[in-house]
Length: 354
Image (cartoon, rainbow, N blue to C red; front, side):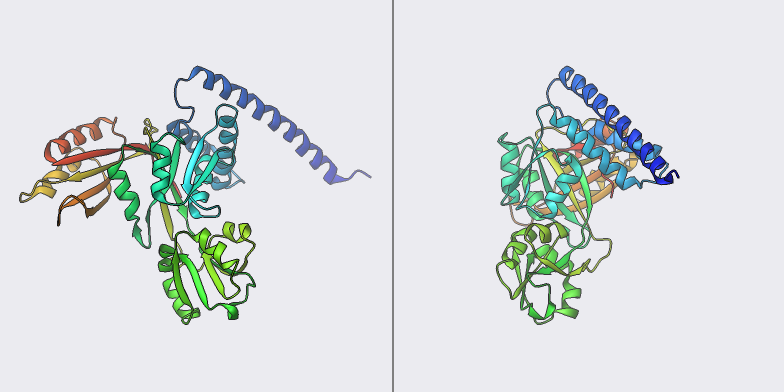
């Protein structure tokens, strides 16, 4: 009697053989393109276009996120056949920054953990690595000040963004809530879980540290401590979960930007980021932003920060929809530049998706 499952498995084997053949043919074509290109092997706008086209063509049953992950890894493997890509991120291993870097560049990129956001910028600015991934804002706790200050101070550009849903976990060596006397985590994560901790661990001392992964490392050495970190950190430091998804806001998301010496070309769905300052005259902000309305450019973000050049002076961080090479965006930027006391274009890049 014929085993009905064998026929299905034989078909799967045949498809796997065909898929492998096609993947290697794709890799060979990628090598041909790499040999013909000059300069950077990584083209963020092209990779964004590929992922969007496949998302539109996908009819299931694979979900869109799975298709995006599969093709990110395929493109990562093809890039690795050339020179590969070095990516600096806020470490150590097991941070959300590492997760964002893997999501954007895939597992074949050479990931380099850094001790601080400043070091990520230094690595990229000095040419020690080609790209960096840094957090820029969180939906619950707002902007990451140090990233904004360094974007203003360095010549680096933004060439991509990653929108990462952040799910915080409480973990310890034993996995038993009763043993928790203190809790380590990054200050942002402690704030993101503030109410949950108030209800369940009101007496535990909360201690901010430089990263969630560092919190997990410390908790692994202290039986009375727990850490708030990612599932990846629990696996790296061999901790047991006490509770998962403990963030106060279920849709908690952190936005990361990819920094490089250059930004990206038009992908069809882009953002442009600016830093602006105004002259000290009445109506200066209104005049600065009027060109956006005039040329139908949507502003997705406006945030002020101290300029650090004098007391009570501020700069404004602005995100726009569209690429600086789009006609309406280019016209708006030209008019804004004429109005602004200072303007720095941080770059245009493909808009990220959650």
